[in-house]
Image (tube, rainbow, N blue to C red; front, top):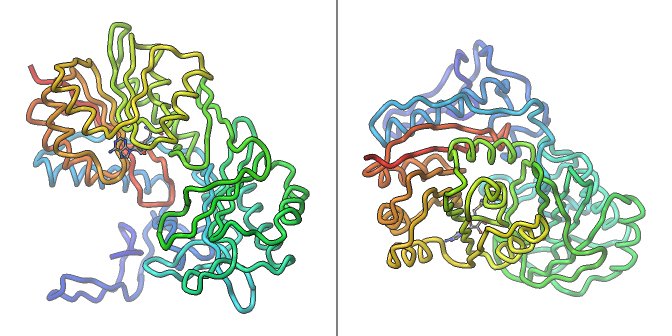
Length: 417
Ligand code: SAH
């Protein structure tokens, strides 16, 4: 039942036939319950568990992992306590808002109400960095002043569809991406002048053109309107280029915790060959490079692949080789050539890996696999294949997305003898 917290005493309406339950009222509040900071928490759908005190959120996520392992792998595993944040708000470095029109407010921005294409308007999101919140609010204001309207999906009129703001907390650089339905942008110079005057912290502005009927935010064509077209960010002792299109972790503080956790579990040695699969802009491979003999990185997206090559150069790293390929195809070919790797770190998207990828791992036989997962459901399914030859050693959840029900987990498995 959504909106009920463990230890709430609640009156619920149970429909046994449909196996559904509906909350009628909370009679006694759980000690784990707290008043959500955000006034639109219940309407928005961006956060799911802001009504739980943070320590309970961590416990809740640990339990989700525990139950999934038990249910799918038919064994009770010890799950390490979820590694949380000191300040679980304002942690995101990427703010992405959809724009819409409203008779009263004229231009609105926020998220879609879950399951709809109706925009819920807000100026302040408690997960987003404050600077990025203010920039989005300013853009709305400028649009109203310049009489520009937001893009209308049905009529294909209006201008701005989405605004994305990416920030480097470490180097204080800010990128604004204006996603428009057409290349024509009336009053573009004026718009830019007003925006930069009010936010001198902006270091680059990009217009991204997305004319397609799609749920993808970004289109393929881009025009750099101001600055160098990307930002750079430090994670640990390394520096990374962030472009508009490439995947980059959204919680930089916890990203360092996540990577160091993965590397600690991998316990690499100077003679090792490491495979970094689903490598994005090469961050994990670069983090690991000084600990191993060599790294092989594979990533499907061209833009992330190109960023990865540049990132290795910027960090003066020479023992990482980057391949722009589908991870499954790449691994099947490795297995065919009987190539060996000692350790695999894999970090697939939410959909998980593929059966063929997992079979290829079983053929390549690395000593260890560190599986970093942003979706425990696909994680346990994939592990089901690997436990044929591997033993699960450590299961460590890391809270990358406080206030939401997203769970990140790092798992170390080692080869059975
Ligand atoms: N390890 C990186 C990226 C993780 S996100 C980091 O920590 O930042 C997952 C990455 O997998 C994305 O960059 C995505 O583009 C890539 N990807 C998705 N499908 C893929 C596939 N079939 N083969 C290789 N990479 C893929």
